[in-house]
Length: 340
Image 1 (spheres, rainbow, N blue to C red):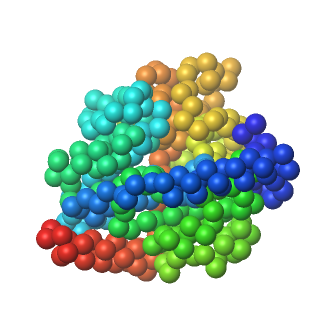
Image 2 (image 1 turned 135 degrees about the horizontal axis):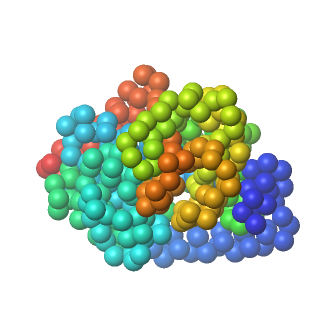
């Protein structure tokens, strides 16, 4: 079903006629939800939200890590918050070195480990933000949460995948949109992950915010899931390897590996899938390359075949400067107004 929907949403461009009435109902429900929402709660610290309009992966988490690191270099103490998809409960939890992905979710662990910032998860984003502020954060960065209405944001960043764009431009389930494209105009920044290839990106240009930037995800050296060994990706050339991806857009991971000269046996899995030994038993001794998000859930598997490929957000020098300037301008103005 997921693969069929993705083809309908992003490739054929033709929504299934049977899904159009459901998309209409979804749009009505979304509009009513916004109309009935209480005024968002504004905190004493700036809140930056990194999100998307579509379901599936666009590169939000690497961008949130990039922003956190950039603000730390600007001598701001950053707190990260996330919904914690897949967490055992919706209660607010502050992550530590001992946190388990089953308790806090897979992506928050990556946020915490990669950024070095205090990180909290919970369905109640206001409470999660208060938890990181209580631990010294001066700025809150929310990974996802664009559609979360309870927490006021001071800067909203929308991330779109350059290869998939906004698909056929339809609302769920006829298309991949969580919100109408018109919501783009309310964002402060649009970040396009990779080359803007999909035609929907051009058709959405009338709704673009003032600042539009390009981001790329750069794969790093492969790291052993169990142990500390690292290998350049080039070391895996010459023979097919298994490529495993349980993320929102597995094809982007596969494409990045192929671009580095690797021959792949592809194994896409549903997003956030909890992988076990049986899922990775391919009846051979070939190396298995997976995403960092998948590796978080495979750390208990003592299997020397398993490697993960971390990715980092990357901007051109001028575009990085424009994004940092936009963030710091927002933060400085709010700190002045709120007495920070």
